[in-house]
Image (cartoon, rainbow, N blue to C red):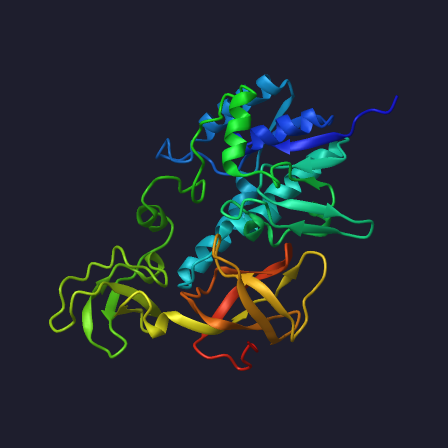
Length: 370
């Protein structure tokens, strides 16, 4: 009698990975769980809540009747993800460590454990789908457009995707919670984790200041008017409204102020009034080296793209570039294109890959045909 295939499941303590495990068991797989600790507890207990997550993962594993393995990747996370996270902020950019973590930590850990323990597949609770063809695997957008997480998976490799299963891809989040409750999973109502685990619910500014030295500087308008003092460019991102500390400015009206640029050479924060100020609008961008999951897109290709998680897909055209960088133009201006964040490309439902944004431009070199 042929034994059912074994799956190594990333079990985080959240409802998504718990239901993924239940669905795999129902489908006939032999499932084992892996809890990954990526951040050491510090002197502010309760923010990352690793122990609470582990306790819940154990309770879920007991409910499902599966073994649970535990591994500590904090040192790897610091060297391969967090160090780059800090370097990007120090350079005045806004990174997205979750994308790098999936490629550098989570999926390599799952694949490694799967191979060592004789498992044919790996699985997570990500909202995504995968299509396995004989020659390669494709990453597809999830049914729930609001929860789709292919943006964060845009840099995984074929070696990581080939054994992958995403049981929640066809489901809406509301269906996940209802099904988890019906199955008696202990975390069916547990609040979703938000943001970066090691930051948690703490004040981001306080956390970042523990690792980087902030340099105060001037807040000025695009015309050069001095409005105040910022606490350090690393604490601000393009399009930000809150926390600027700008009071009433004579002759400027009541419209709120937004970050529209960073002058890193002179350590100046540039602000202007209006959520749709022209300096926040970009028709083009350049990237760092792109990563393609299954097949590369070529210059001249018109695709769908997004420059942030949950952004509606935008029409974009690759107007130039090579393996080291891309030039991308949009048919309509994009608000707050942010260096350090990623642009992710799609062909229909398929996520082709992505690249870190390097620069932005108000006008494209080669406009997208409408």
